[in-house]
Image (cartoon, rainbow, N blue to C red; front, side, top):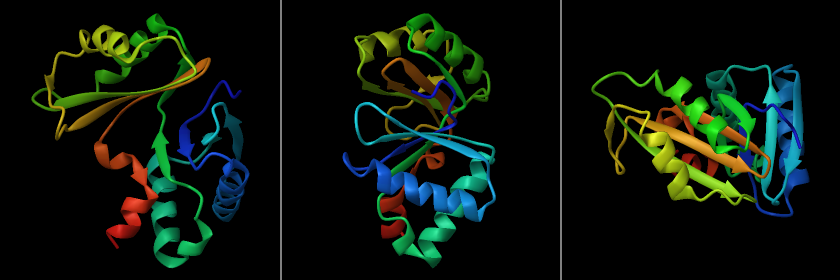
Length: 174
């Protein structure tokens, strides 16, 4: 499994190769250097590329608008700001470091996606939330503290909700 990644991409289980091919084609059109790896469980692709988050997401949105048939197998794309080994202390440390970017007066929500781990979601939320001195808003947060656990590796981000791209939702809004 990849140790460093800056995007987590979801697809339908069994369609990882097709989704990875779509990513390769898209990244080639951007002349971007990237490593693509599949993760367990199925349906997860880890991507480490040298492209800015907003540039990559803009390119995907532009491709869906202009050539929607090119991206049929990618479901969601989530930016990852820090990847760490799946260890509660390391996850907490990453969240503490990244959560400093949440401005005073703004709200947050913690979203945890767990795959192949024994660490419980409520435990992660409890341990990380105590280090974020901002208002919690579960329905309409200004920021999302995203914790994506994929077996032995975890991706952590503190991002605006719109930074998570759902290709199906984006198509519906066109």
